[in-house]
Image 1 (cartoon, one colour):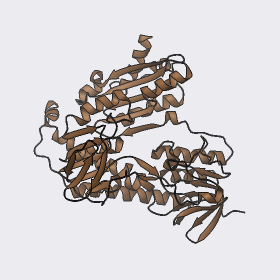
Image 2 (image 1 turned 30 degrees about the vertical axis):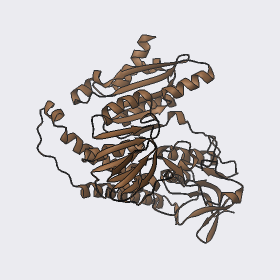
Image 3 (image 1 turned 180 degrees about the vertical axis):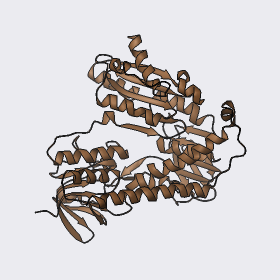
Length: 459
């Protein structure tokens, strides 16, 4: 009756994960992609930015002569090749994109090149052909958000899409936004010798992070570096050129060499043919779904950034697997509380679950109290041996049943350490149970061990 059991519009990490799981469950599967395989994450996001951060991080380490001297190491002048760093990122992207494409072909997923859109119930149009599919997943992702008044030229005023190419190193660059994208690019640019002006419209830098983490991160990642900050100030107008002019809401005008616009992302939900099945995005442009990723239209699902649930590549992959499970009759939902995230700065930030203000809001609404425990990298044997003692692990939990609500880590390898906490939240473990888990010594993971034990000792 159908050309396919499952058709997926969008071959990003979410669509790819759904396709692999669909084939594993015996579904005849096709994936439709209008641009590069791998979507934002592989081509313009997490992969190339991490390659740049890896190179910039090495430069930063080698330039930290006092730190190296404390370890008994002396280095000479540190040089780097911007073009080679950019090639490293591009080569990494090409390899992972090819690996993704080959994995789909090897497993028998039909890859259809072209722009897909809904053409009716259980129908997908690609170019001039209409396919039928028992189930359809929309996984079209997102693009950078550019506020009104900002003009892009892709060279002097640009988004992260262009920034990951590292075409040049401006002597002075403004970064609009202090979320994880702005933070990571500030880490890259300052390591490579650029001066930064960071402009944040809200009153607090890093507004999406837990306040304690944001405060410590500002002390370590912002203040000691060549970064000046504006907070509570809107960039009303940005004009490309040489120099770039930035008109601020407080009346100041800045002239800089370049400007990176890192103000978040918006869903790619327009012109998808949703009206053919009586569906439309909400006011913010997202396709609304329930926890099973169902859109309310039979056999039509949506995953990833286009849903606005949690705009992370691995969250999209988890959502894709959830959809396939539901298609196969195994009722499954997504546990967003246990999905971790990270900013790959030096040092890193890792977090999962609720921030303290979010937990307080939940506690007031549901009638319970929260508890908070902390431990510090400065007391961790491995961190002391590494000479990397800036850092904090913060545990937020319910006082009544002692289960975790959120864990936030700032410090060396925080992006890896946070996974333990994510698994603990997923299993709804209590802080008392976790306090009896044995951690290898000496390891950085003991910062979590100490945080759990401090809570148990205090109660």
